[in-house]
Image (tube, rainbow, N blue to C red):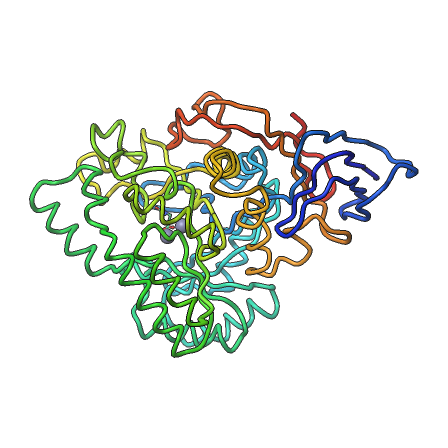
Length: 438
Ligand code: URP
Ligand code: ZN
Ligand code: ZN
């Protein structure tokens, strides 16, 4: 099968040009004049951007919680991803206590069989057992895992104490792979959770107040300290605070390999959304919580100056009815998370590019190229000869208002409902095949 994309503006993280792209089977085989080549299909991309398929390095499809699974499984969540221009996701393997990491990995791979896109995994050691180091090695060598994930919060469930964090970092260093981390100080959060519940302060607002900015900043500081002395790189997921960004920037300026990710909700939503009835506020219960305008602004600046390398979505939707409302009288029982995978590019385009905060090249960098580099997704993250034909044709003229009626995620609510957006992933090509042509 041969396809040509003609007349589009090809945007990579480091260059931009108007040229034809020839796709043969699942690869980009030529960039340049393709006028004399006979093909099966020609797509005219005049006036549109042609960008590498999005890579979302942080999603939780089919995540088990006491309130049931996150409402998108790999099938529905990956469909939503495609509509948003994302062709690769990196989800998580989280074992049960006592379960082998390798067994948990194989099980998770089987759960993802119905995904419509490319799927990779970060693997989370949640305790240190006799076999953990050997299993980490097996995952890297035999299964191609390039990253592990640790939680500094959620102790008692998946969170790790310092001695285990150090063992994971040391083992990852030996294996030459990256450790990603959820950074929040669990002890502070628990003090505040207990206090608020005992005072009858049970609404979603107290979810946010129980996870203050200092909790994130303290955990980032501690992780960077370990990384500095162990001399191994770390990747901090879903950074939400100005002070967290400043700490990361300082470490980077000293030459420490600290990578940072943020999410659209930390760029666009504020803490004030937690005021009001549960019906309105329950959907915003996610961790870390939404912050202040100054934090939104600091994160946009951190994207611009390169302190933050990636924007993931932390896609993890739960229905308001039947899931989030399990915590209507106790915020500690509300499952944490929200969806957003299909909105990542359109939100960054509308509120980043259209507002003059970032360029289209920057969008490519933070939604695709940097993740491909950091997580070693070979042949992804750029429109280049020999690379995988995961391609999005972006129509900058399209516009809409996000609503429950036009969303693709499987959820009865949407944290971006009412947001006006410009731009659309009009055509999405996955491994050389046109999957969306709208
Ligand atoms: O609230 C969130 N983010 N839920 C998903 C799990 C996590 O902490 O990333
Ligand atoms: Zn997290
Ligand atoms: Zn997450």
